[in-house]
Length: 392
Image (cartoon, rainbow, N blue to C red; front, side, top):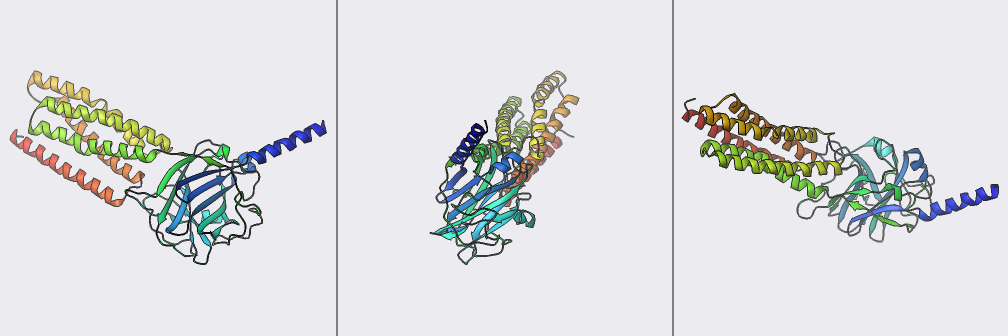
């Protein structure tokens, strides 16, 4: 029996080693990220995880990876050259996501740069171990959220881990990506550096400031991971909801005051209502992709506004019925008007919160505020003139 047990253990250990692999994602030519989880970390739910960042030396300033669905609140690791043929690895806090990630001594202390890191054959590489807690990352999950970014440009050549770096490229050719990893398929054979043929996390002489490429990377099975479609949903959701709340709903109300055509007013508002429902559906899916459903002010307030909006068409119909019956505004009429105004204001405010949550640029946030402010002034002016004309 003992012999049989020993044979079974040997077979299991061999199978584990044979199937050991790292999860790899390459969002751009030459820019790759790999993650490996040792069995001890899988068993305990926390402990070392091994990460590799690699990017071409020529034409790239830095490359980074973050644990989290978005920059806000993420734990971020940024690699750049140190000017001496090695690399600097800087651990940073994503914070609120509205400024560039700032150096974190806490995260840096939990990070160890390993052998195999440095600059070799025109590629800069950072192999490192990070001691992660179960509250930060579920190491046994088949769908974990990660972010990545890189910037084209000249090498930074700095040994400072708190160096101020420029934002990743945005616009028509953005250099960032959100993706998910199946960590159940990224288990390494042991709690050691999986990116080199020899050396381990325990015997590495590399430092957090930089290291020489002291050994050759081993060949490991690459697991193709799923790229989150969040950016597409984010754009569609943002455009639909912003245009509906900032433009269509207010102009639907303005047309009623200027033209006085109730069915044109109803048609515009009904179209906008269904657009909001569609945008809300996109928002729900987006929040699920980013693990943000009902745990941020934007998603909670947005849900409340949309639910309250469901009552507004019925108030409108009741208002129209009452107006035709008595020939003037009633309590229901004023309720319909002010209820709609409050919902529009809440919707506009929530749009601003959404821009912040999406880590949008200040220019975009300013443009949103200016457009909303101008339309608000037009709305107030039109209503003032209409009230004056009615002798109120």
